[in-house]
Image (tube, rainbow, N blue to C red; front, side, top):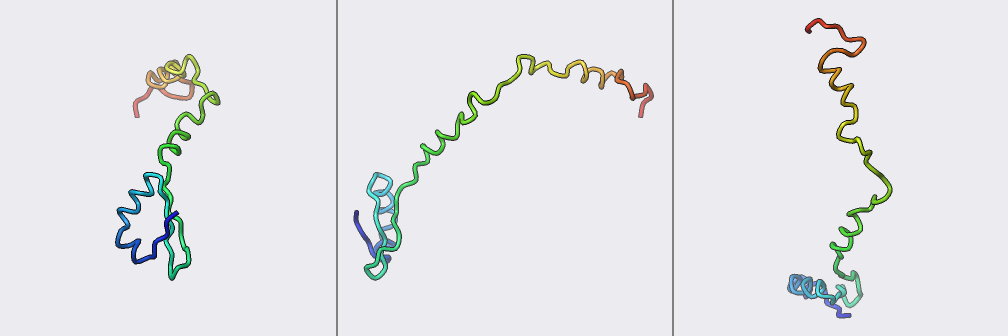
Amino acid sequence: MQTFNIHEAKTHLSFLIDNAMKGNPFVIAKAGKPMVKVVPIAFEEAQKKRIGFMKGKISTPNDFDSMGQKEIENLFNRKTAGYSQRPF
């Protein structure tokens, strides 16, 4: 793994990052002492793990589209107990 001093890393940062993304991580050093390691973040991997993470753990009822239909109709038609037929 290559090591670059801070000044050199600042000067060529874009190039170094492009290389790191291609699988060539590097180390930034200060006065010859390694300070940080630069490695690419695998964004695709993180996103793939997120999509579908609840698969098989939850389900949608078969009557999902009509659940509560009668209650909702009654609310709009004012036929539910406790509601008067008077307008507001």
